Image (cartoon, rainbow, N blue to C red; front, side):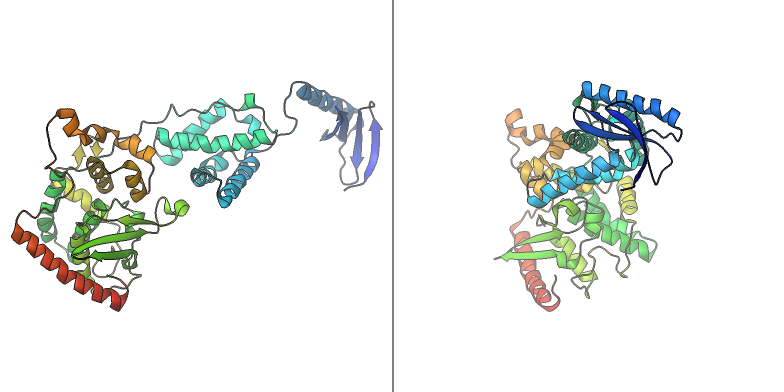
Length: 429
């Protein structure tokens, strides 16, 4: 601590002093039994005395009106809020959503508010933040996004309140009213998806270049695995390896399980295991034929020459435009619509929402928000009085004859023997 080299008493409760390491006077005063120190920023004694009086009166008024004396900058408070959430997560007492809040604070709130005092963040400042956030997102955030951001912001205000750096009355009202409503998701119905599947052979055959031919072959497998597993197109699908696929057999029945290790939610929740519908069998068999030298760590979705591609979305877009399926009553379809199709079909089959949420790495709240339009269709029989139970909205591969069933059983048995032998040999399908 620096040595005091000069002192001037103003009243019994107030004096000013200088330190050896500074030319400026500091005010030191006592109020209600507590001592406070504040720089006057003045080098001249005659100017420092009124500045000290001003600090004394300002602090006295704050204390009498229950206004916090000390405050903190936003980043400091946010860092403490994040630390508290991380501690609670480590102890097992924190909510899973804390991971989302931490990410939101680090990506948006801390970069924007940074050195602003927590007490200076009012409704006008929040409106300015809204404009900046839209620029960062390049879109108007959905209400669900705003609610998530507001919850993260409230963790910071609660931390400031706990440490008496802000008063309840100083916390601005957070609202999600400016957000866009959660959009219904554009999916394919049974007939539409069957139309795409039927169009794929000619789509692949009409490729002018070898690279295009390989891309479209891969698209066919990508589509089937996405639509029959619910895995997110993009990071989740594109980081799957052959070693992530597990095969389980019981008599002549087989089940494929896929471990999703990287994607939108795995950073916070860890890997999840997805149970595929039986229709993925065809995609895996096609992939196995094209990649005879596969290894467990090899990516599942790559071109036949071993290269990676980022053109699947473009190829899918061309396919659905050619088949007049780009537009839908719920918006334009994209590669991501395959996941929405899976969720819609599973809801139509009346699979419980909590199971679908676990399978797809999402929340029941998100399902209710984006797929509520499916609910009436789920109960078509009850609402209409007409029995539609003979119609399966999901299963597209239907064996109509006993001969076809026998042929499938024969092929499955043959494949199982091959796959089991391959698994023992190379550690993957």
